[in-house]
Length: 102
Image 1 (cartoon, helix red, strand yellow):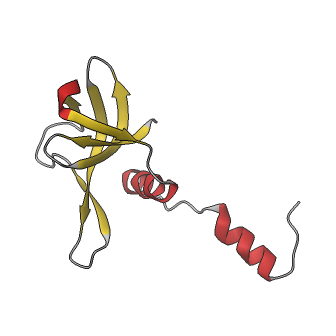
Image 2 (cartoon, one colour; image 1 turned 90 degrees about the vertical axis):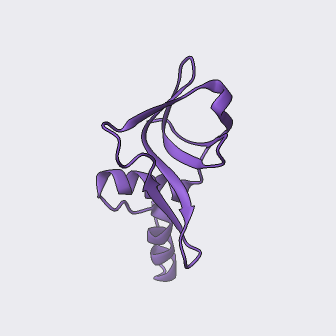
């Protein structure tokens, strides 16, 4: 998967599996939106469309960015439904308990 964030000419930020061809094909696109409590959410880009792939012309794409690790993890989790653990909390628990990691 080539998970990227793209900003399109309508102002939306979209995260998805991006393939660069004569334009940009985005599989499983999700729009980054801010909820009422200020927390970010990922919502399907075209929830009423048939299929889960969208194409953008070069002229429609303003920016392409690599997502932060936490955002990429949230995207993968939403697609798979599987919660993935990161190593940071495990390392902190081990350090806090005075154990060593080899």
